[in-house]
Length: 321
Image (cartoon, rainbow, N blue to C red; front, side, top):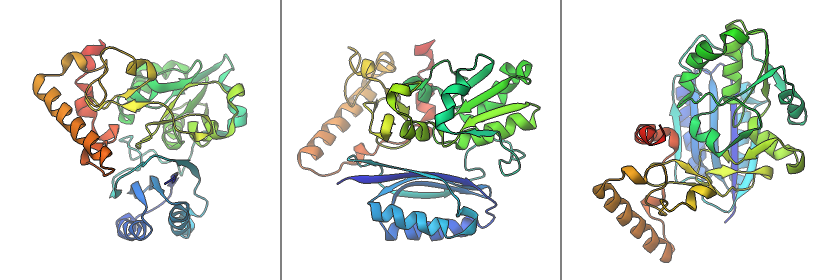
């Protein structure tokens, strides 16, 4: 059955986030809404899936609060099952920068609509930065964009101090998946003395939804934090998959490698896979195939998000060096 997927966020003063956690979880369960919603005193951030009616209900519930009445969101559809449960969690930040003094409600950079983005990033005097993490950038990015080579968004401040201090008087244009990281990143740059800061409104998802492929400067696929793994223009499902061995997102060329074994390993981890781990993955893959033949679900199908598996993934650094 086709699933409707909604991504959304809103920076807002939300001191009652713990009360919101209980109410939102109850409402999601009522309408069979699955996915992840992060709440903090600075606002809300989520990706959820359900029937079209379920998504309509949950968005209406959130937007009933005047703090979220103008909350932007993106809608797409997929034949895949994108989530297996609902998680509504409370954290210190809805996107973790690690600096509580950065508040996008106070100031952010200049929003750039997708139709105007190409002109901005083709300006030779503009520094274009992909604010996402290394594994996301590897699947796709904009032509000419700088990859900060960060493992987590918490490293943004360090990247700026080491690489951008001499460029405070230049135009800086940033982008991320849905726009939320760029709001914080732009606020951070402005607070640190940068003069002219731009960011793609609604992020890559908004661009892929509204810019025709023949006019696009986007190359590759866009990583998303659910079981689709990636999307392309029109927000259609991409071809990328997740390696069960190391949780790295794989492009088609990775899956064509001699070192790729479906459900077991890929070129990023094949050389470090010990016999015990390999046997465990082989058995899990066997159980998944049995479950598929019986048309039932197996827990092994529940791919954990990359953001929850960084420790295992970072053990692969030595392979890449």
